[in-house]
Length: 456
Image 1 (cartoon, helix red, strand yellow):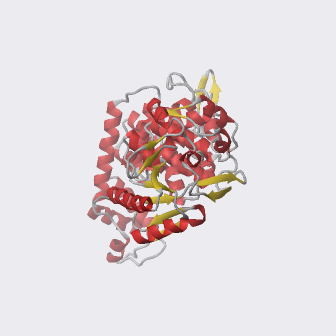
Image 2: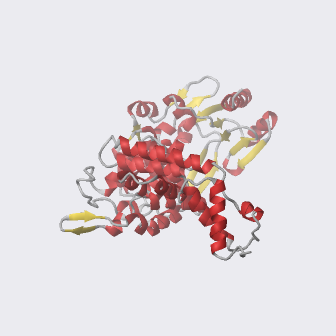
Image 3: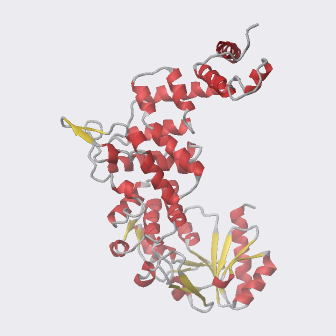
């Protein structure tokens, strides 16, 4: 039995025991929404009504190993199951942050009042676990059918500023429109106090789960919410580019096209999140390098001048060293593949580029997305063929045996700090396509010329 089926069967077992005590159990939130949309969702969220917390805990103890995720908030789990079990509750804001809430558990609140705390009508739907009957207190089914994101309640919606980002994230994931009234409320919300972890979580969902992540940022733009968390992106709005190369418009428009093109390629990257962040950030440097000379717009060295901006943006969201390093590396090198392809450069030049890259395949894909973001759905097939063939040749070279420190020791050299210089030399030979035996001979000759091997 699959994990998803185990969760469903566990939910039904709990619901049957709850029903024996006169209560009801509902699927809630994304479980109901995604089911109606035909989207697979392995996680199961249920809400138990009409019994006391002590009764629920006894039921959970009889079903499995109970986990008190937030017992004071009426939230539980079961070890070995991806199932969240909650009781109806009321929430009252006590501050500006996402977690600044006082929670009141009330098992006898009733379906409508319990659903009132939900963010959007499509997330306020409830489905009886045993009968399958849908409870729709706020028109969520119609909004699902019409592709509309509409907030449930004016008062409670603004109490949680993360909901502004969630609205934009859901709009991107489901390609929904945000209702005009909801857009107006989001414009009034202050996102400054949000925890960066929560912002990054919503950003990742938009980047990794949406076919068109650009919708997320367009919604933030339309609701005036780019400024605090995404100022580097906001600075690209209205930043003109040479029309001959960028008929799509300003740098922001180009970035959005690149982002959507990258979304179709992301699963082939070693780090899909880093790849998508690279697509988002790759042209941040244009904001500080734009010049107009003799009527010509240029952005010389934007790929390097933008690195401090990109790092500042990333560190605003995370301290994940590997993610930051990966993204910066892609952004710094993003121009090179298409430049080398345009000049039909040597395989050796490609090898040096790929060796300097954290993820050469992702770099080729980013170059492709960058080209697709220049107002065209097509790219030069010869350039793409050159890069793919070059990447394959590079991977073949890197798979072959090569000179290592152990080889130098076996040849009679004593390990020392000078080894790094010899291995750098050997790497150059490797990238030039020199086979290991020949490369070792040349490396030892180099060591001799440098005085590391004594003349006999």
